[in-house]
Picture (cartoon, rainbow, N blue to C red):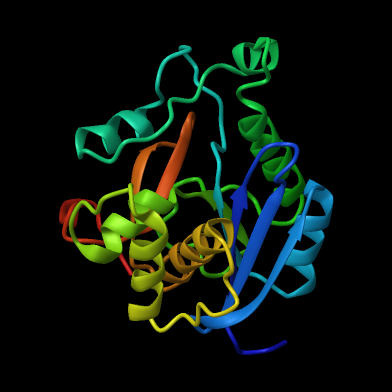
Length: 219
């Protein structure tokens, strides 16, 4: 078994865009992959040997039909995010507005066959794990401040470059966001992460930052 630490991040889209994934090895760019099929993304993550996988999609549905605790906590810090509905609401939407969330739920189901969803245990290094993350929150954590989302491509690429992640092959915002999710997985592997929310409705994991020092996970 390789001693290298391989992690992956996945950006989740709707039916036409599908999924974009990026892998890092020891914090450096390793590979990327795209597919319309959740099973293919999950198989790629296993094939490259990813230990930790960050996914930009809700890992659990709302229990109340309103924003989940994790989303409310992010918005209190002025990090705007979508509110996750109940699964019934998502499936019933006439224009399939929540298709990307449904796709994300399907991906988590495929990933959890081998990579159980993170449950809040601060010392997960002995096992394979997947978790929910959010690129805008990752970007804010890396910057140490709230960064504008209106120029996200430029800002997020610069933050990846500052973290020594090669970006020349990240040809669109989907790959950039997937790389930010992978970078969150790398910080997670090092024990340097912050969580929002609670396990029942889903934890959102981002790199540890000065924004939430009291919630920095123990190493």
